[in-house]
Length: 150
Ligand code: CO
Image: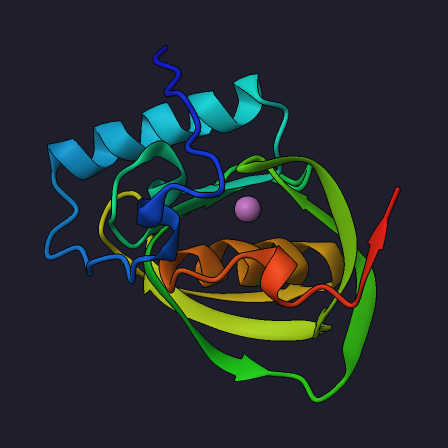
C-alpha cells in the first residue's frame, strides 16, 4: 500500500487542465491503486490525480458501493434536473458548502484494465463523479459553491 500526500488548494497543479492518458499501462494501474489507497486512508469518497500532484485524467470514486476507477472520464449526458447538497474536498480541509449538480449523469471512459466503459450515475455517486471530473479541468467545488456551511 502506498499513500500519497494530498496537494492542497493554492498549488497550481489543482488549476491545470490534466492531460489525457494515452494508454492504461502498468504506470497508470499503479497510480490507480495508490490513489485508491490514498483515498481510503484519507476517508474520502473520491480522488483525482491532480490532488496527488499528477496532472493526468485519472479519478477514483467510492461512495460505499465499491471502487470505481476511471481514466479519461468524460460526461456525455447531464440531466436537467439538479440537486443541491453539501460537498467537501480533501484538498480544501475544513471547508464545506452547498453545490448544485446534475442529479443524473452518463460518463464514458476507460476502466483500470483499459476497457471502454459507460457509467450511469445518480444522486451522490453522480455528485462525486462530477466533483472529481471537475478536478481534471482545474475546477474546485468552492468555485461553484452556493453557500458555505459550518
Ligand atoms: Co475534491
